[in-house]
Length: 236
Image 1 (cartoon, rainbow, N blue to C red):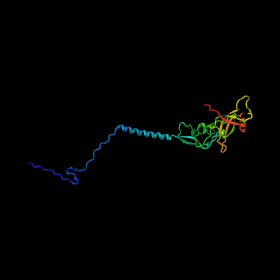
Image 2: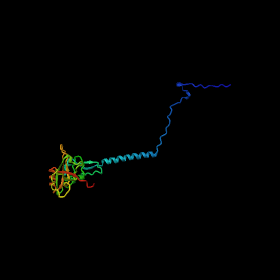
Image 3: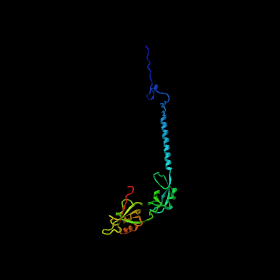
Image 4: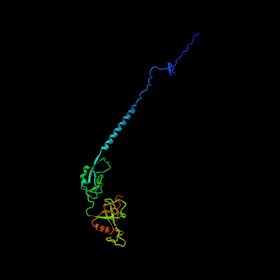
């Protein structure tokens, strides 16, 4: 009868059989390199190029500046512009903004301000005129308006108005045409309107009228028998 030999496995330290021990360091599992797709690479390059082009356009826009004429001190309506009234600035100008170029400053010096000009503003071609605001054959009449007589609509140069005679009750309306119904009125044009005076609120409006009507309007103003009525805009 053959003897069966039993194989005895001698445990080692840590309770791990000697036969299970691995000799030498264990190599880490090999990870295959990620495969790069050509389409993704091309898209990345295109995005980078587009970003660079956008930045270049932005830099060009920021650098595209124009030398324009500015106003450096207050200029009243009708005042003749001098070199001391004007300055220059370099700005990124929107195409919709109409401003006098710095190279054309000589073309506006000597002209009159068609509107009131404020320091720090750009000068537009429409803000100056070579014509006098009081034309030949006209007279300029100052009219003081009390707060309740001042229109809510801002009075601007060139605005057409009617100067209406409103005599005191019972007073005769001098100069009225026989048979004419309603109060007498004279056509005029606003040349300048002041700000409301502190305390009284009175606004002085310079109105240009026909030379033959100037004395009549002045008499109405002196008698406090005049009211100013705005004409409707011509394009309304």
